[in-house]
Length: 139
Image (spheres, rainbow, N blue to C red):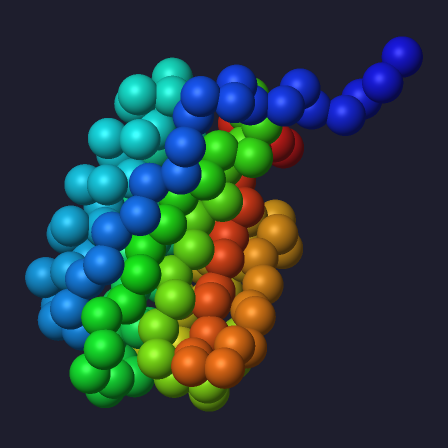
């Protein structure tokens, strides 16, 4: 008996949006994620996915880049998605442990917790991509 997840239907294409480096881009990214997860019947992932894309876009906005960032959501299989944000900075984000009273440095820790460590960074010629994988029903 195989425990590998079933592949997603081939007709489901990733959704991609190019956004400016502005704080209100997080709202557009959340809207994209809500629309796709609802269309794919993965509403169970909505709350976590919205938080994750908000954190990743907020980090990209802080880079001060001038090119547009790219937000992408892919359906990995019937119960999993990957949320990716590509920006023009090659400086990788750092997972920090925020103190109890710290008001910042909690973003990647939240992403790490919500994805159960299933996130990563790819440094590219013109920047980087940070991705986070979510699976419905993961414990």
